Image 1 (cartoon, rainbow, N blue to C red):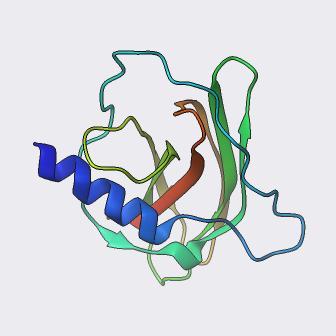
Image 2 (cartoon, one colour; image 1 turned 60 degrees about the vertical axis):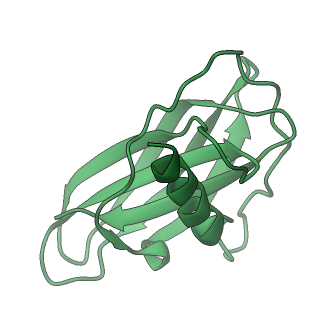
Length: 135
């Protein structure tokens, strides 16, 4: 199971960052995570589609967690389900907490806003995001 957590961190680290669009907010430093936090997300399965994400924001909510939001655009000719995984922390070995949201049945050529609330944060961490299609 440990290799799954490491694989998730490597994937999130490779896909992390934000939007190049004007108005995208820079990442901020995260407060400490609650001791004893455990992983909340299984290893991702699907096709990575980082270009589907725009206007990504990841902001501290003042309660020791973060909220992430953005727009997902389906550039294909069929409806797809997006899976957005957000991790706030540094890419380090071992188990880390992330949060995932499924955004089902986005129409071909369509766009949808999403929000992921109460993302656990690691002190001194930055926000990483991964977007995949699952169907």
